[in-house]
Image (tube, rainbow, N blue to C red; front, top):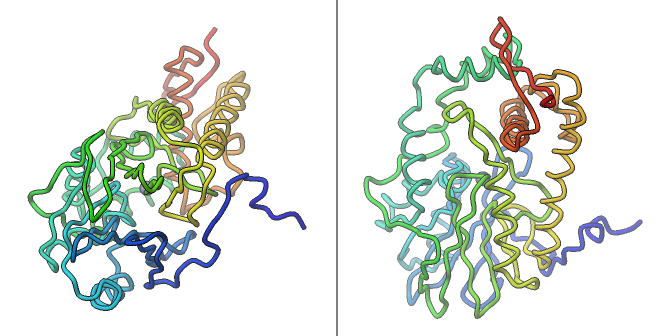
Length: 348
Ligand SMILES: [Zn+2]
């Protein structure tokens, strides 16, 4: 049997991930911690950076009882009861930002995030418990959602705050190009866009290490979605630009510490694969648009996995990201029918 990893051409250096709630040292002063996720991936990787008698934490885990139950032992045993110098959050998604506000309150640790991630995260937490807005219902109806899926969207709207503790009222800004001194190392902030609005990666040139968050993952492709708040957004253009930029800025042999999966080398190969996957999806979509189609009709061209109730919103968001990309490139035209459904076809 060929090793499936060999198809990827990325090289893993640490074959034994830590158990959930435990950490292992990756390089001196940098520990790999795993926390649980109650869905498909099963885990998120967080990073503990020694910082002169204290620790900086990168990402925080989902705000669930399971994660909260694990943190005290991490703080007292694996971090030796030393203070937290800062809580750094790569981006606002609940598995990354979930426990940030809770850790801030508990450990009096300042929060560091990029500005757009911080502000959007606070907005989404503030939307918790509110009814679904008409703009959202219109957006997913236009994508072709049946009544049952629209009802599910309405029911689930505003659940972000269930998995993300409220953020503190003030924070420190992570900004593109800035350098953070943490312990003996200097970490440069590199901002990527497309998966999230202003995703921060941390790159240490001296140790040739990148904490990549969800910006580069070894085995899965990060979701790139359009949301009802900005229906004409073009996040796929941002994402492809970011992949290109990262390839220019990172050495090919950088050690990538991703939020999901295992640390690996082979960033350039992986960035190329991610790019090709999307370009291939765009090509298939273009061919499909020889006949008028709705966003939900594009799933077979874009996704290998089955689209079900649980991943429909993400799939629709990603399909619309591809359609918007082609449309804004001038390849497609779209129109709404009398029922409010949006149709796309190759531009004549
Ligand atoms: Zn994410």
